Structure formats: structure tokens, C-alpha cells
Image (cartoon, rainbow, N blue to C red; front, side, top):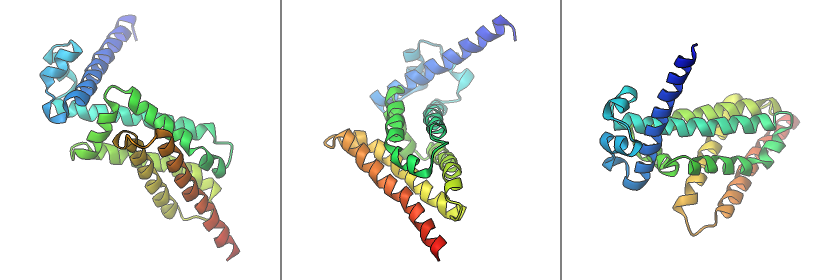
Length: 211
């Protein structure tokens, strides 16, 4: 690849990111229904043809926003799994609060990230992104837990993990929905409940081995 081509690729990525960042901020300020492609272009400082090079309409922009946020959170999860790959499932159970905090920090650092999370739940057009991402997260965690739980049917393990994933994301959203509850309390209580659910898997396996 030539230097010119590399520069061109970076410029295209920069323009796309500008559009997404602008859309995220507008989503937080105005809500999804009041956003328009013209407003996004104006905030990003680009022309409408530049937006339509990447996106067909404002919903495609919001879809891309949701995908970008989910991808960043999924990357954090993969790093968290790798961090404790040489330990045991108890180590994962002890460190769920660490993952919850990292997930929340990513949403809060993303332009409009908290509102993107809300849109992923409220809009039928965005639901598929959230569900696909949560299933992907469930697969990663199931793969990490399964070697430590050889006697557990994978389908049952996957379901338990899938419910834990959903619970974790709901708790992260509570940080902004329940302003009267200290965020440290939400993190600690969620982590405690997740730890109990993970360790319960070990208990079930021990009971099965006795039988």
C-alpha cells in the first residue's frame, strides 16, 4: 500500500469517526427522533455527500454507533478474560466488578455512549445489535468457564452465562437511571450477585460428581 493510499484510508476513517462522534453527542442532546442527517453533518463539519458515502440515513448512523460501542466493550471483555486465563473460575468470579467498571467507563467515555445504550434497548431497529453482541459475549465467557466445569452441559452453562451477561448490562444502565443509589453500591452488589451465580456452578458440579 502506498503512503497516499494509507493517508486516504486514515482520512476516510477520521471522517466516519467524526460523523459518529457528532451523532452520539446529538443523540444525548436531542434524542433519536429529533436527530437528522443535516444536523449530524453540521455538527461534524462535513458535507451531506460525505455522510451518504458511509450511511444511507440517520438510522444507519445510529446502528454504527451502537456497533462501535458494543465492539469496544467486547474488546475489553476479551482482555479481561485473557488477563485471568491462567487462573481458575474462582478468579473470574472474584473479579466481575473490575469488568463491570471497565464496561461502564467505555460507555461513559464514548460520545453519547450512555444514550446509545438506551437506544439499543428502546429501538426495534437496533435490537439486533444488542442481542448479537450479548450472545457473542456469552460465547466468550462460556468458552472461558467451560474448561473449569467439565461436568456441566454446555447448553445449561451457556444459559446461565447469558443471564449473567444481561444482568450485568442492566446494572451498568442503572448507574444513570438510579441517581440516588451510589455507583459503588451498584457495582458491588451486582458483582456479589454475579459471583454467587458463578460459584453456584461449581457447587452444582461438585454435587453431580458425588452422585
